[in-house]
Image 1: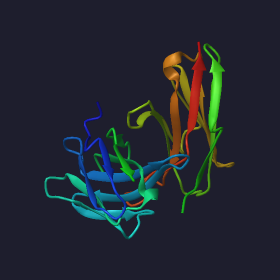
Image 2: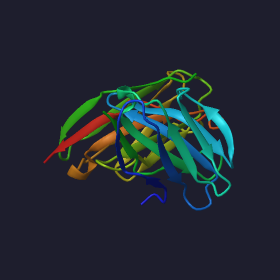
Image 3: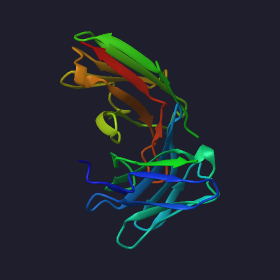
Length: 112
Length: 113
């Protein structure tokens, strides 16, 4: 158990809908990262927050947004969903702004 | 930005044999190279990492080597066991706060008993 909690574990929705994925980092970790894992695409970095502030942005679509709250949990919002958004979404946390990442077990999103 | 290439994409070995996975990176400023193991239904977990001031690092049956001149690094697993079967990811980063890890596309390792 990495100590990172992600909910929901599975989510099935329709095209055009909006979903919110939630992540609770390890106790004491200030950084939260979101990664997307699709078949044959490995782990694609989406966005990083550190102590409530956005630190780095990767290949995150404009339809996606995220935030980190004062209690350090984070949410990833995916809107106007398309079939191609079906993937595993991982949250990871680290103590500082870099270093070892601890991953949650992921949220599997299926868009029908 | 950084780009990490990983080979092979799949690898099958007999139990007890060695397995080698290779990665290349593009950004010469990268100085942190971790390897993650992802078991079925789980998130990736760090198994070993190396920094640019070290050429090789070992931890029991696993070792990582780094060639900064050639910009490549490799994972070596000796005396493979069925529980080594998983997807392995290499990654690279500059190691500063706003340059998160860039991952390779992964290698699916199957250890055949």
